[in-house]
Length: 326
Ligand SMILES: [Zn+2]
Image (cartoon, rainbow, N blue to C red; front, side):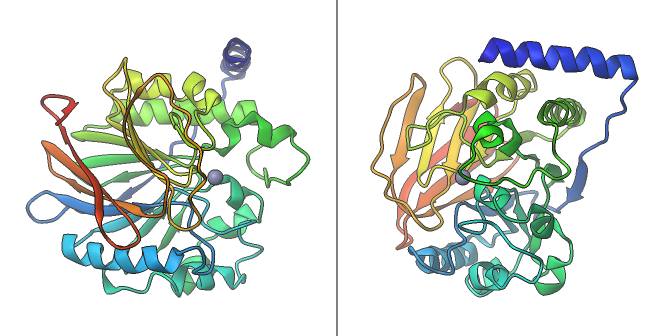
């Protein structure tokens, strides 16, 4: 499959180069770091279930930890609204699963969000519509974009179109408006991402997408991302790839590059009871609900996973000089 994909993309590249195809840039947002240059944030994924499956408990603990760490913003790794995204900009699921759930003072910050496969089963254009910000100004959701947070550049990537199965399965409908055809979309996205990564002068480069690259849980590795996206991240010395999709918390270190794979997809329904190791180094795996915090300075990233009671399940440190975990 990998070779076929590579050949497909090379073919597209040749055709597009021949047509003089112009490339659009990824939209860029800016978020100031604290006065001392540091940044604190939370990461949660796979959450929108109107408070059910412990979503409300996770939200409450996010509020407390968010307060303790004085967070600057929240990142959502997608599958924001179950089971089938939003129906329209008037869909009350937006309030029932987001506004009315994450009510703590510390969570009244921007929520930078990507889309998951369940979001694609609804009206994607509604979920991306800036009109939602009139209902809740925290909501910032685009397909792919950049967040310049001074000490770190976040590159948010829409990973849904990579999954070939979504394009061919008949069980669910996916909203590919403004995306299809797949090969053009992926070509443009990877080109834009590569350019943006090369232009970045931030100390840290983190990439956020919904789908797993490396995972020991239900969905496992995503072969299309390993084939197409990972080489771009490795070439540009991305430090972390952060995803949801698998309803768990995990940290996996690559055996052949400095990149670290982090899953925070435990915002509501979890406990899949699946464990399938891969060949990379598994550092932590929790098959249950929770979320992640990150505290970032120029030299150190501290990240921690929490359960529904706010207990710290795991804490790790990435040192920029050593390019290694302690
Ligand atoms: Zn998903």
